[in-house]
Image 1 (spheres, rainbow, N blue to C red):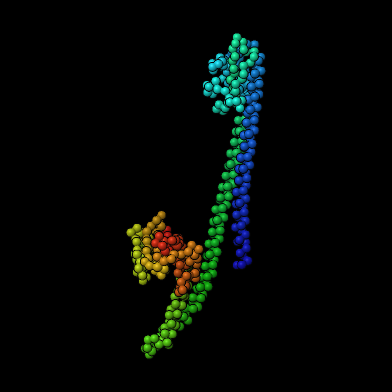
Image 2 (tube, rainbow, N blue to C red):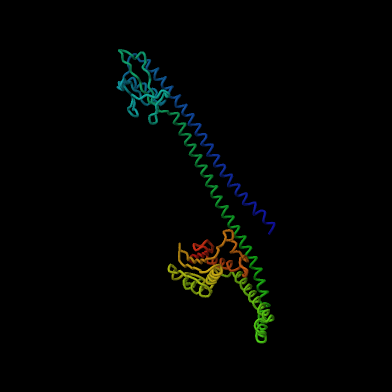
Length: 413
């Protein structure tokens, strides 16, 4: 067993290393794609401005080639010539915003607005709007027309769309890697839990075999010892007065023999792993019967209890008796609640004792773990095994009353 321990410690470490690697790769991929997109966006802005300036120079050249003030047909010809480059609207206006000739469809109508002193372009929707100063050749007859251009930054938009697509692919890839990491985390956690459960089952199996052999070896000579000790105590009780030392010693032998007998019975109960025999049972009646066999003050709440449930009555009674007995020893009064919740039978036993420290809430269900001066430490281990054989769980929590609350949850068969 000792030689098998190092691999079990290395495997979880290796598994978590793979998970960490997937997470780091996903984060690095997302950061790289995001940084690349930011650079592309900055570059697309420069491309957009360059495209707008190139179209501005081309339009100026086209207007300069005209012999007179351009008409709408002239502006349409210029628009058609530069349509592939992104020119979408050309207009000639006179103050205050009077459109003399135009070509194309504008976005908005505020042609008297100009970019600020620090900007050459005005962003209008998905276009750039720019104003051309009057050309000297066009100032005939005192007219000083201006020209409004609206440009769609085709190349810059293509770059941004490509960067957005790349970002989307990167995000999907990063999310996929993170999803794989989450799956691996859950699988690793489940594998570790299964490994702990298998180790617990192996330990309990070895302990059960040892306990069975020990109990059977002790039971027969213990029965003989107990019988002879009881006979001796009865003889001394007839011949010796009460308080006699020899009589007290004989009674002590009988008491210790009874305690050892209880220990062997607990051991045999613990190793008993046969299949349970479920049958329709009245849970409330079972709880009342179990509580009646334990001396002490027990309050039972059973109004929400089902009329019947599939249980191995004898073995569940053993569980309830054990829980109530422990609760009475911890601090009465004891409250027992029987009800259904989420299609499960819930039996809660609460006491007014000091409670169970959080670090001991799993240990108390381990065999031979006990905080009592007398006891075998097998009662709760047996109780949990019986509940688990029913497909349920047995756990301990803090009680609203201040003590411990043991909760057994048993699903329908």
